Image 1 (cartoon, rainbow, N blue to C red):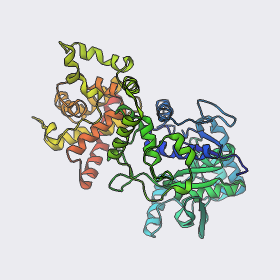
Image 2 (cartoon, one colour):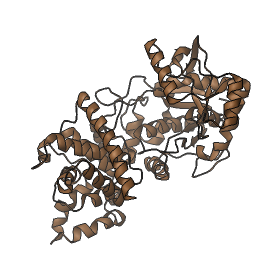
Image 3 (cartoon, one colour):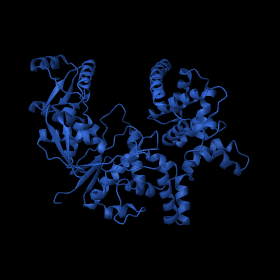
Image 4 (cartoon, rainbow, N blue to C red):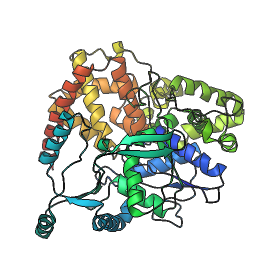
Length: 505
């Protein structure tokens, strides 16, 4: 290739660092290294309401733990910075306005009610519910509403008929009817770009040559292709990787598998093994060996060896591979050092001391008392959650509502965890002691441990949430019909929680 290969990964700092992010990052980095190119990390923080600094730092830390290194990024700099979209905010408006001036985009003043009506009309006509059709206002009305200061978004124009042809490095020619593509918002009412505009502009300005991403982005490819056309820019080569799947072939989800990279670090997996396993997701070495290093993968990497069948992310298979790495790649000294660095170090143990020291009489009491702090999932059963006062359905509601509330918690501290749980207990009208029992069991395996809130703060969000999900799974979870009812109930509870917190403030 005459052009320098430049690939990127562009995660959103809105939650726990996902194994899917690491999977795509791995393939982008291997492709870049194979072609003596550059691998870039860019933070896509266009969702300002959900983006947090903690999440961004988690992403950087977890990818580095795996051994993935980028040549340019928000923490290392580079010639095409800044590498956070929020720091490039003022640049995007000019590009959106350029499209309006060209006649390729328009100001949209439609209300949410009007848009809902359009969606219903499209649905009734057998079309996708995306927004398309007659959305523009006459030029005179647009000018008047802009002069009044009415709120608006900027949308791109989409052809109303015909077929979009997208070339994919793995899949060949992909054809998508334009009627299936919506008039995407490019600039939101708060002035922030959507991913679609920011992604195209930044990829162009950062000279990205190959966009290797998950297949969930295939349906967005026509919008991106059209934007490149509108701007008169060359489009990068597209390559849509197969999605990771659960063992039941469904899309990988945290409800069926731990999906946070941090979980696997907390549970005692070797980063080499996790990266090795991700490398086997839809790809194989020329000699078909199962165990290989990152350097091995880079040396032999070729996208032609990617299989489009949905790769299965099986935790039991990962556990087997991790054991292989421990036995074959660690000598005794390495094993001791890795174990110390994992959990048996002062920084990790120090927060536990105040809880352990006051409860032991001999050092031999430490293991049974604190063993849950050094474990992954606890191997509980439905019987573990037998409750003297709450029915099983209520126990499941306590666990599910607590989980949903804690999944939304972006600032994981003891006080925030306690406030969430205490407020939820009050709103559900369940005494704190009765409410906490199933959470104690889910987190510590027993109702008789030290403060479960302290435990959760030390364990971290990834392991805590994984244990709550596992507890729900052991109790059988909720059926589809029950889930709809429970979700509706939770939305009502959220309103009460917000009201309760407003009272306290």
